[in-house]
Amino acid sequence: MRIKKDSLLLIITFGLAGLLIAFSAEAKAGAQNGMSLAGNIIVPSLLPLLIIFNLVIFSGAGRIIDNILSPLTRALRLPRCAGAAILFGLIGGYPTGAVLTNTLFENRDIDENEARCLMRFNVNGGAGFIITALGTGILQCKRLGLILFAATTLGAIVIMLLSPAFLNRRSDNEITYLSLPPAEALNKAVESAVKAVLNLSAYIVLFSAVAGIITLPKVLLPIAEITSGLSQNGKALPPEAVAALLSFSGFCIHLQLFPIIKGFKMKYADFLLWRVIHGVISFAVCKDLLLLFPIKEEVFSNYSGGVFVPTSVNAALSILMILGSAVLIFDIENRKRA
Image (cartoon, rainbow, N blue to C red):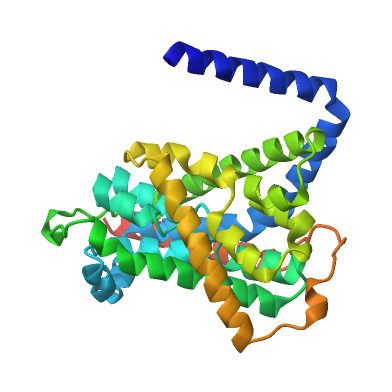
């Protein structure tokens, strides 16, 4: 059986390589479009936030958030240290939740069962991507972006509230928190964030190159790769469907997260099932929110504009540079005193 699977994989990969070579011009154009999406949307909106979130986790400063959210994590039968990962996962965008969950797991702050529980709901589009890049940029309606973010987040919260049924409470006494010196924490945060964003960008470029030579129905594009799919077809889809697709997150994200979920022995079928459940819940929530906060009909007309290029990222990068400088100065001062 193993040999058959390997043979099939070999045939598929060689066939795909042959197509990329035979239709190199189309593949190159698709790859360039993918690089534009990654460079103009993913990197500016996700990388600075992911560095900051990782810095909080690695430095141990997240204990303040963990203490504030301890009633929630206690109710969810999760360790207290999961609080910051949940909060940042909900607002940070994929793959923030998965990366932070994996950080806790690798540090042995959570066990396999708890990591699997977190990954059932901690996969979200995030505020930066859904509100700014998708809502304001691609759909050209910030209000719709806010509704989509609210729908997908509430969908995740519904699944979160169901999570205690899937694990047993573990005592916080068994947990050791990661707490690195500020400068070391910043370096590790940058390394982890760059690795995650580079991984995601590579998948976007690959899918975009393949999409350049293999024509898929537009309605299926977001299922394959959420960013490029919605950039091409987001305006033509009902907002409820967009909310469902954002919660499903696309197979490109699934492939990126596969090594993480495999690390704590989560079956892909389980992960896929909860992505579908999340999509169904978000669809229903978005439909209700649109009844309460209706959007003008012209927002959903066909859209043929280009990819949105964020221009407000300089502020985020400036804040990050100031934060990094402060951390380094603080660390140097501490070493001098020592």
